View 1 (tube, helix red, strand yellow):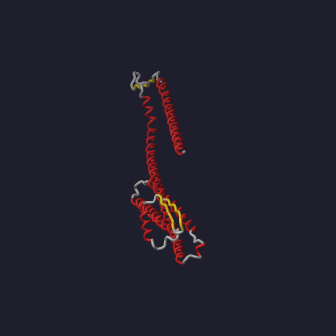
View 2 (cartoon, one colour; view 1 turned 180 degrees about the horizontal axis):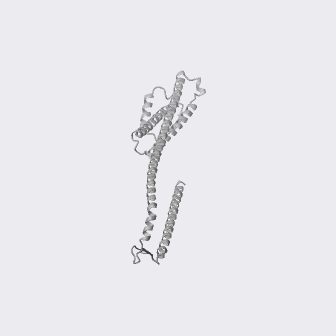
View 3 (spheres, rainbow, N blue to C red; view 1 turned 60 degrees about the horizontal axis):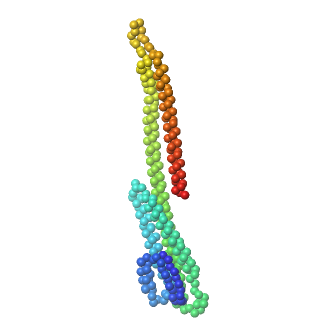
Length: 286
């Protein structure tokens, strides 16, 4: 909304109103109609008082509407503790609350300047009637009352913003707490899995050496004969036993090297992906 005022004569004032809602226009006309014939047109600031009253009505509706929405957010938080908070909606509501406090602050400054400039001309004091002076004082008192009303609405708007910021902070902390609890549960589960893996590793180390020895002696490179012609047990080792070591040792080394190469490549790939993601985020911020 915007207003432009022009005083063309001592008792004639023209005000242009821009972008005002229909309800504002209807209420202003009704207020002027009810006040006609009571001498309010004597002071050029009287029309400003009517305009300010209607603007205050709009501010009052806006502030208390935001208050109702904030209260609904508080109630829904108490009722639906399991639901995730809607942070975009909360921030959008905070934007409206900030805008409300900003415009109310400007309105307080504007009315304060109007009161400062609302002075009775010195040249008219001697010829003014008591009725005219009384009307002047009434207009000034009305401005002061409107200023106090705007300050009260500004305090309520700031309170709405503080309550909303408190809800946003609380919702963020609740989500962080849930994530922390989930992380603790994951850590406990990982600890249990680690204990199970340790048990498996101990059992493997217990039976692996004996299994390895059994596997070697069960190959065709060894021949054990319990009953021989001489009446003694015979144990024969093949002269080609070196072939087993010639293949198994290099194959073991190659397998370990391939695992190390894959591990280094996988780690480097993860680091490169993180660096590219960070650079992309920095470019988006710029």
